Image 1 (cartoon, rainbow, N blue to C red):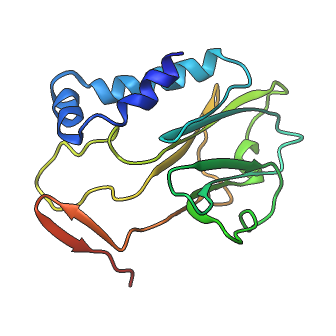
Image 2 (tube, rainbow, N blue to C red):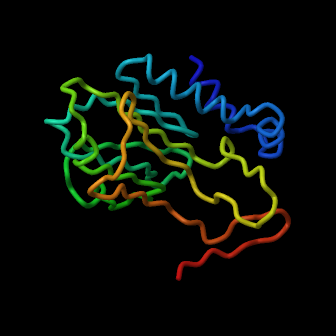
Length: 186
């Protein structure tokens, strides 16, 4: 499956993916390919060490919100994506789990939809930033966490009455070039 190949590409060295993005927009094209695969593959659920993808069919009258959490147990090499379709404000039970990322989509996501049809909602998680290379070297900023996101097919979403919450695990340290950078909040 093409998704397996894309998952393997996340293991390619970051500098090679960066050069491919600058020269050919390769990473952007890969992400767009993932979105197309999900659009035309109904009810996909894909879980690998480097990425997870899940697709939901949602309708305005029955959508009560969605929380998806990317986590690991005691082994950081094995990750899970768990999605809950309800309007809770807290993520999954976190006992003995390390949450890498979480996204909370509010019930009002489909509020302005006038259609009765079911929309496709994609959740995607990538274990690192390799498919999202920094191509501007004017600053020392870089993505130091995993990447989580969502896409709603067939509908433009604007002016939400409730926020979309994203929670990311921030590493204590990460390498930027040859320097060790300490992350702090506050």
